[in-house]
Amino acid sequence: MAGGRRPVGLALGWGCCLLLCCAAASKLEISMPSVVEVELGGTARIECNFYIPENASYTYIDWFYVDRSNKQVRLFHVTAGGVMQDDTDYKQRLSLGEDKALSLSAVTLQDARTFMCQVGAGSYGVGESSTELSVYKVPTTPEIEPVSGGISVHNSETPEIAKCVSKNSFPAPNITWHRNGEQLHNQENDVAILSTVTRESSGLYTVSSTLYAPVTREDRHSRYHCTVHYWLQGHRRALDSQRVKINVFYPAEHLTLQVVPSSTLVKEGDNVTLVCEADGNPPPVFSFFKKNLDDWQDVTPLADPDNGVLKLHDVNKTSSGTYRCQTLDLDDLSQIEEEVDLVVNYIEGVHVKMEPSSTLREGDSVMLSCDANSPVGLKYQWRDEKGKKLVEGNQLFLKNLTFETSSNFSCRVMAPSVPGLEQSKKVSVAVEGKPRIVAISSPLYVRQDEVINLTCKAIAFPPPTVQWSINGTAHEFVDKQHIASNLTVRVSHELLQAGAMCRVSNKLGVSEKHIQLLVDDSIRKDQKSTAESQGVIIVAIIVAILVVAVLGAVIYFLHKKGKIPCGRAGKQDIARNTSI
Image 1 (cartoon, rainbow, N blue to C red):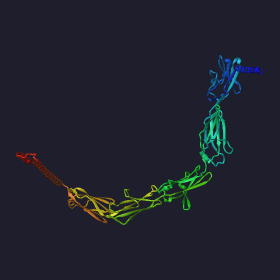
Image 2 (image 1 turned 45 degrees about the vertical axis):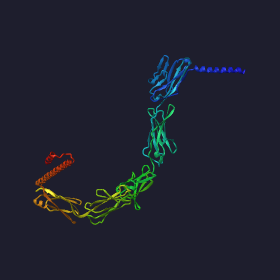
Image 3 (image 1 turned 180 degrees about the vertical axis):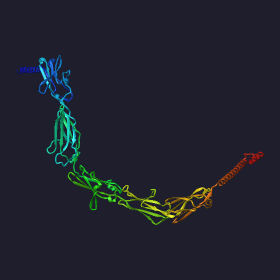
Image 4 (image 1 turned 90 degrees about the vertical axis):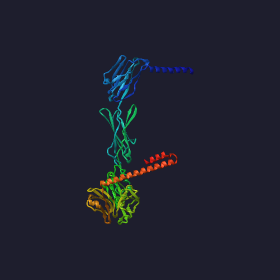
């Protein structure tokens, strides 16, 4: 019995399944997307897919839209005989594809509504479906504007940080705020975010948001930005603004005061700058003081208090001392100060000593010693007047002095630990003595009545005077211990006979020399030429005699060797040759 019932039950099951399948297959089916999204100004394409059993044909296809009063307004009526388009506001922007899909161009915000597709299939009945057309407009990149001026960390109220605006979007997006990449949220007595949404006449939305938040000293490095969020094709999208910093006001906590250049290298004559820097914002007001004994002298009038710079020009040792920089924060009236010691390195009292200090004469020796005062170690060097280095050290020994030795010497004092710190002291070593004539124009060949220059050069110290034994026009040239005198005269008979005398004298003695004048005429020149000619003739005769003697010696040598026969004829030839 049981075995008999199983086939009956199975048959009944299959029968029910076949009835259901036949029912489904005999029904007209229509499928459409529930939502179609299109960007403002774009083209929307809405498909109407349908299934008619047994591959039967449709009787008609109608397209509708639902107006504001929820009324269906027909757009197209399609039959086998053709396509008829109804006269509606959409007429110029609508079209049907070969697959009977509806296309709507130049989509506006008002096009966001329901579109319906209805299909009639005779005995298979009528089916319909609908699609919601959604119109969107991507918002513009948000623009952020930080608050102008600055924000104090001591603000009693939560200050405004920045504003953010995004324009021309649909539907309305929302804005979030971020600090250093971390999203900020509304918090009581802390962060506040106020947003507004405005619908423009175009139908698009403008969204603005303002961030209020307290700031700390660390926020001087913080970066803020806003993000606009919107939905597109079922996904959440976002656009970020640029990242901005805000100007945070906070009091100074640390202060530095330094000397530029380094205090250890400052030398007299330098320009020195004291730079005071604080880590507050805005920079505080700076004041400068210099310690004099137990009091502090205000030197702020010499400084630029806004920039914290005190400039000292052409410093000397009196500029050394302790300097103080003091700040006053105008926000909370707090004060901090810092001190620095300025050391100005110097060389003073450069002194040159000469031993012996008495008058020096030719042949004497002298020792030059140099000394100076300075807070740093010194190095000495002696140079001559041309700048040539003579010796290292503070002493210079000169021996066997002459007039030529007399010169200026320089003691150069240097501080090796302070580059550029040096001073020099010059000393003149004058060697005294009676004049010495070093050059004179004698002898001098002249002609009668000729105008000539007589020259006399001497060296002496103290400076001498020059006198001539004859009258004429004299010109003197003096260079240190050297003196030169040129005398212009006309040659007379008396001058030829007596010559001229140059006399040079000072308080230590006299030197004089005679200038001999000789006649220079053509006779002397002719006699001299004749004597030279006679000398040439005598030399020629002597050379000829020497040649004959050498020739005779050669012949005699050859005869002795038997190389030349000595008969009568030979003797005659030899005699003939020797007589030539």
